[in-house]
Length: 82
Image 1 (cartoon, rainbow, N blue to C red):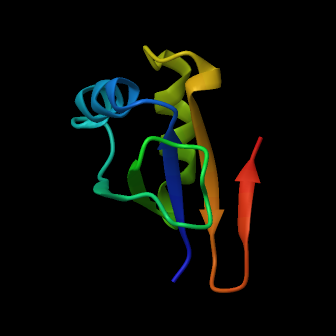
Image 2: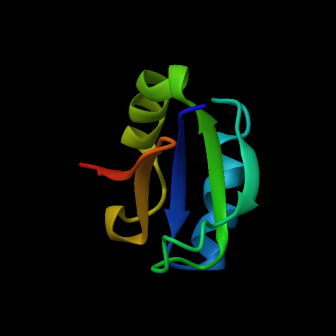
């Protein structure tokens, strides 16, 4: 199953994102994958079908763009979304 993962450079940013997104999109809080080492350890897992919702929601993100990354996770690869 493919999904998106938002990772954060700090726990503070991860918590701020959770609060901001809680009424906008459905997500799960999960540990960051070991293959992705540049984060605080807390990530948000979002269904693949919600990509447009993610992109719309982060337009108003209260978090600096440099403090998070969005990845597409598939069984064969981990791809950073630009």
